[in-house]
Image (cartoon, rainbow, N blue to C red):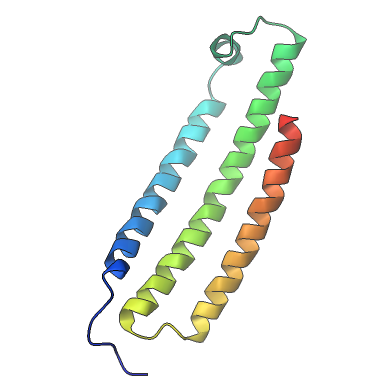
Length: 126
C-alpha cells in the first residue's frame, strides 16, 4: 500500500493523548494501592460513620472494590497500548494490517472483561 504524503493532524494528538492516558492509568493504580493501606478509622471518619458492624461492612466493600480497581488497571493498559499500536500503524501509512485485527480482538476481550468486572463492582456496591 502506498504511504500517504501527509499525516492527519489528529494522529499526533491521539499519540500524545494515549501516552498521557497510559501514565494516568498507572498513577491511578498507585493511588488505589495507597487507599488499600489506609486504616479503617480514616475511611469511617471520612464518611462520617461511627464504628460498628455497618461501618465495618462499608470498609470491607470499599476495599473489595479497590482490589478490583487494581485488576482494572492492567486491563486499561492493554486497551491503551493496543490503541497506541494501531495509531502507530496508521502513522506509518498502513492501517489495514493483520496485526491491527489482532489488536482489536484483544481490545474486545479486555472490554468484555471490564464490563463483567463492572457488574461485580455494582453488586458489591448494592
